[in-house]
Length: 67
Image (cartoon, rainbow, N blue to C red; front, side, top):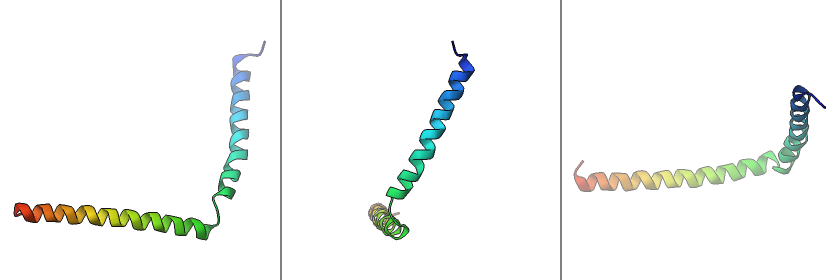
């Protein structure tokens, strides 16, 4: 029977192997830098618009309260 530390070492090795195979596959399927930047920019623009809307609503409420 294998000792517990050999089993744990085997599991650690298996986890490392899965990581070494998975990370490059995910990065290669992510797309080119330009496509990723364009997507991130769109998401950033949407978030910026959302924050602007929130701050505008907050200002309107403050003005209505007389603050």
